[in-house]
Image 1 (tube, rainbow, N blue to C red):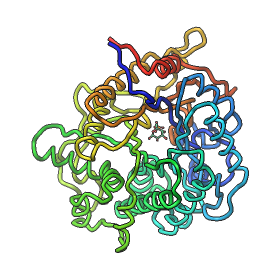
Image 2: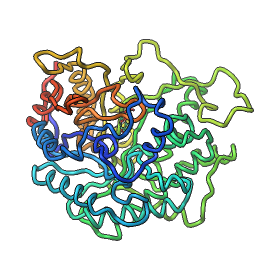
Image 3: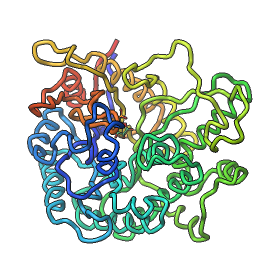
Length: 458
Ligand code: BGP
């Protein structure tokens, strides 16, 4: 069967500044943490060992062209542009981003720009990071500076990438700096991120720029183990905490009432100011990026909560390991292709069918060299992964979902936070020693699909 996509469908991939650029001035929390606890990073490889986009951007953009991308998302590094977060703009950073943006446009590849992809300038973290409202102001200034500098040529902006992840990693589950475990502080970080988002949207609207502004959320559909009311309630609470805590403010302009009531009941609400709700209402977006990697399966708890334990989302659910689930064993994530369709249908039916696109989807695999045939990685599993997801995406579009494109994570194998280079995601293989780039089979498959705006599958 042939799966054809709408005209002008966005075909591309996503990456981020910190994971690709290397050679950075301006310290981030990642540099600081790595210097102190290198053992937290796979094989002790830190954020300075990234895929050298800062040097190779021009030839890398040629490779994007070879992959027939018509669009590409990366991020601006706040710490590169404004090393102390709040002061002088670094002219070299302005030159660098200008060159990248201009080259992308010249090559017919529409740049999509994220303003914050997990990379907090250390100077901002030192004053409390997202717990401090001054950082919200500093971010709003940074966003405004980006719009002024690049807004004439970048027409698709994203305030944040996966804003729930720094909340989970940094303040609940100890996999990002500052390694705090404290729900109330986590809720404050999440709340201030929403305020920062809304301030950036406000500034963008006030500047009457030519393009559009949105956010990228990692939506993990919450599936209950069964239709038993206790399981259904567990899935509902997980959905409120991990999806709707950002989805509702950015699409509806307000928080779900039952999320607020739940946090209030457990005395976990952040400090709010009366003027905040009007600001949040102004943060409604034009375009939603959806990152989809895995579903979340939950069941009700089997045991009582230890009242002495720190308050956690898991007070309300246990994760559920569905027998027979398909796994990506390298990343430990379930692969569930219909999830992409369920997300789109939920957006269509419950959120007014917003303009959206798949901004990340991908499969990290370890030791891909074992698949080399005639000098090229033959990653059939990735082609299978993409085409299966695309058939579900296609079904969503044919049923009226407003999905405008599909971007893969990622372009060239890049540095993956604490996993460093353990799992490879790229269309293009990176030789860490020589920095040589070689297109994988999946890259060729994607290039053909993008060119034809369609693919064939049994
Ligand atoms: C997303 C992030 C990316 C990227 C990807 C793969 O959550 O937006 O930055 O890293 O996941 O995940 P990981 O690198 O953790 O394997």
